[in-house]
Length: 160
Length: 209
Image 1 (cartoon, chains in turn cyan, red):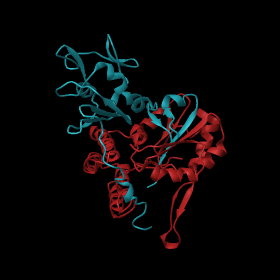
Image 2 (cartoon, rainbow over the protein chains, first blue to last red):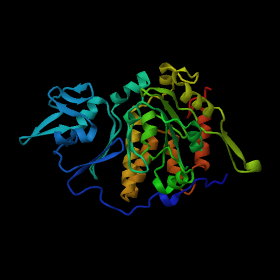
Image 3 (cartoon, each protein chain N blue to C red):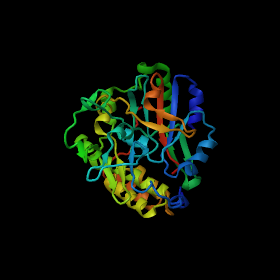
Image 4 (cartoon, rainbow over the protein chains, first blue to last red):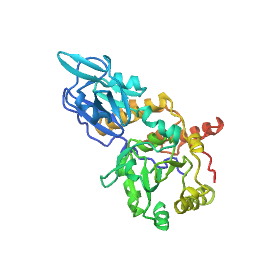
């Protein structure tokens, strides 16, 4: 086998430099999605418009808290923050509360979130396949839930 | 290779999701898919979302998922046949000829197949993911965003961070090496694989068939 087996150095950085988002906005990465937030509050913890919560991580704000399926996380003053008469949701505080890992590039205003641990509990405890959402090569969105009623082999490979 | 298996099984209630863990995207994985003329679901997973979801650390790995969404086998070196690369003294073989017959048995018999594992066996075979390893996934995806926007230094920084946070990930290591002159099976890879063996770690669960 040659030492350069599966070497694609030309693919390392093939892209022209472009801006990630318009000036003043913030980008969230979660489950492979790139979510652009035009407005955020000032201060630590990534303060987002509560209206943006569901498109960011699938949680819905209800009277009982931020809810995903049957799980509701009650709100408190660390999570819902008033600033100049406007309400913000602290995505950072929410992630910390749920034990969700993230990496932030403050300079570029990009927050990359790992999966929320409790969403994976049914896999770790009961061997239930985790939810995922990903596009196929034709651009069709494939969700784990779409596979219900069929047997599926999910097999990874790579060109390398 | 999986196309042939998919055609042989030919059951409308069975699907294959074939997922290329390739940050190089269409340019790297597309031609290989096209050559196979596939009719199964083809995904190019630049951010390694699927490996992250199932806690896989290497390719090829797989999960069998039944009609109710239950995983009934997971994380074995998933080969459709015995492969041979190279000739003469350079030749290497890998893969096996027992995985596909087991898969066919499961598709035919469902829960009655002897190859279906209990939830307890499956959860034992699912890797734990430490906080650092979870953070590594987030760092890797951040790197890929910077790459896509032509911001090389930041891409390199977060790729390095991903590997520091999850040094057990063969996926992150080889993905990175693939995009280098050294390639995915050079000196660095051989050393890591050697270390893996000497520490008694596994990158697939033992093929229990």
